[in-house]
Figure 1 (tube, one colour):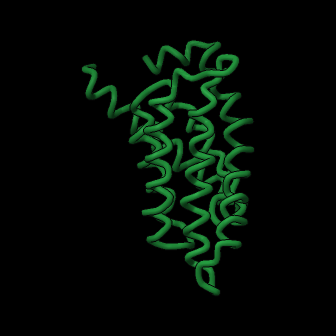
Figure 2 (cartoon, rainbow, N blue to C red):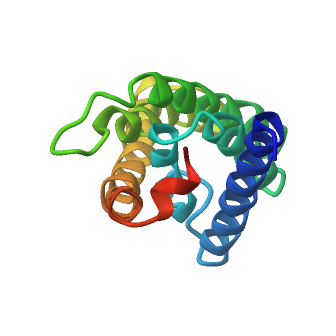
Length: 169
């Protein structure tokens, strides 16, 4: 299989996994809104292993946000946050602490906190208020931190210690 085809296949698999895991999180009311624990966000660590994770995560997020109760704005804002954090996560993949690409896991927390927090504040019935932006952004970021630094770290370790790492070469 040539490299371009392999890249597209990897990105498609990551997108499909992200969308499926977000759908699973949604069944428990954890995929949208201020309090989010999207299991799919653990996949953000894949940016440290393959550049195919950049479009894979962005497309997976876009597909997931098609069913967002927040509408079209969530498709644009959420996908943008994911795309930026994935690209930066790939660029920072070699900055590690105890073998874990910490910045690759931290960028989704920061950018989703800022972008989705601003989106939620903008959509608030009272209109945008800084206080609500800070609270919403912090809540989104905490959910991201919880998922990325538990499930994301576990996924990273599993990839590093098994033959899974060969899939990302």
